[in-house]
Image 1 (cartoon, rainbow, N blue to C red):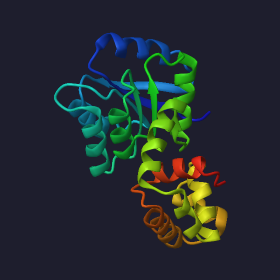
Image 2 (image 1 turned 120 degrees about the vertical axis):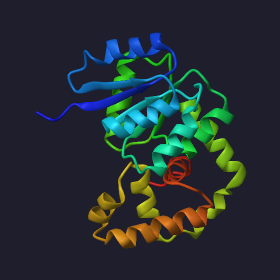
Image 3 (image 1 turned 180 degrees about the vertical axis):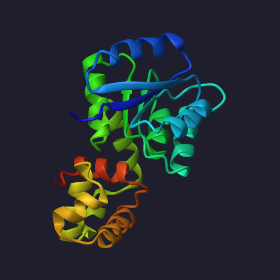
Image 4 (image 1 turned 135 degrees about the horizontal axis):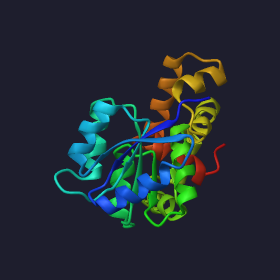
Amino acid sequence: MAEPIKVLLVDDHQVVRRGLRTFLEIQDDIEVVGEAADGAEGVTRAEELRPDVVLMDVKMPVMDGVEALRRLRELDNPARVLIVTSFTEQRTVVPALRAGAAGYVYKDVDPDALAGAIRSVHAGHILLQPEVANALLSQEETNTGQGRGTSLTEREREVLALIADGRSNREIARTLVLSEKTVKTHVSNILMKLDLSDRTQAALWAVRHGVG
């Protein structure tokens, strides 16, 4: 039997953490390994516990979710971060995704859908509710013309399609029979040509423009 998905809960409201824990603890394949009441504590606990997935609120005292995400990336912490919040504004959504969030759902999400979201981001996928994806895509379209995609080579489009499918560089290399170094070069070229800053934006661009 596979090891359960280890989850860390980071939210400044105890009642929210308690509700999440109560539901998640009845899932056979998910284990809540800890809790934190703010972003700073969340970073510390993530380093101590090494969870697979962190459920992170955005607006918290001491250190907010976006800054906590940045700190986790700086520390090269491997946890996948799923934002669970009540804030829907684009000015909140976009910075969280750019800071490295693997997904973004709202606190009124159906409990079973939340469990599915945890499994999805743990599997390496990027998970966004439709309105969240639209918010990010609308900003990207402001900065990135659709015609930029025509500058991609056929190989770069293949790599981009696999990025959109949530594949890691190692998995892409295996699928396309390339070295990881070559894949990294392709990814860098894709981001440069599309004027994007990370894989999340590249994946969303691919979905929006039908690459895949």
